[in-house]
Length: 405
Image (cartoon, rainbow, N blue to C red; front, side, top):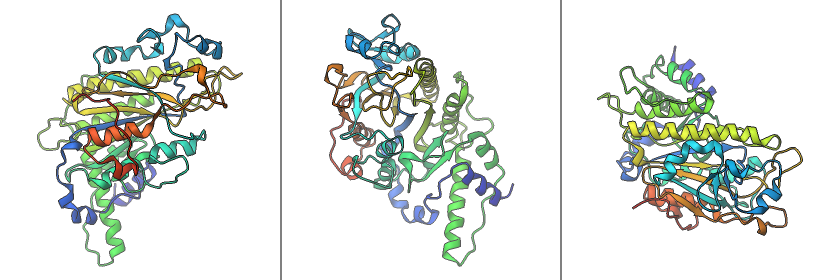
């Protein structure tokens, strides 16, 4: 395969055109020194479509829950009890070992002031870390990596798996989107970098960008003889994304053959699709939450094999939650707040945030905002990576106690 065909393939698979040029990378080499904060890997899991939080983390002791949800409410006897009033959906049973050993945190009541219930606009707010009345172009992670670059030896700032949308890495991050990971990595073996002898600055820039993409692809592809996981990865699209993410991490070392996971990228984003449950929610969400739980278990196992569980933070997010009251189609419509999971070897497990009070719904029948999602971002930026969150989020948000010292 020639390099032109590979670059065309890369574009079709979602490799962003905003990839930083090699010239800019070299010019900023002094700023791309090893930064201790980026030894800590972030894995984001997008629950695309707006996950129903009340059937995920269930206020089973509140009679209003069953009054609002006579058909889609989770039967009390099936709820996995976390304490005297809160429980998990039964499909999340596989995550209970993480909960019991204090490696799983649940942040309740997460949203933002004046929430928007449009899929497109709300995920844009989450991805950019903006106010609901503010329109930013760069993803919040793009701004973070602009504030402090990842080490020069990293293959990329981030890798997006299972989606063509760059999300929080949009418009400036050195990131690759692997919509079809196996095809991309297979074809990358056949592409050859170009020798650059151009006097035209624009053409030279394009060639430098292409070479940077090829270099990243080469750094990310699995190599013969590298680490073979003992972890059993789940099937399906999301399970394949989890397996690919771990292969990317295991491929970071190209000299010793020993995995040094997390040393090749700063962040990995995975997407689990299908949470827009306007009808027939019970079976659909149960299947999705089982995929999430099985994927989380596989991540924990594989990261443990790589010696990186202690230095990895896994965080879920979704554009919004669902309304507390079920609709007439045995589903739920777009709502405001939802709980989110944070997991890892250094996570301070337990319930955090503001639990739902179903007697205090607003005039639209939605729960009030308890935790601004940017407080979770501030936790990542300040306590996980050692950045100044004010420079990234443009407003000071108090980090949450989600990490052990």
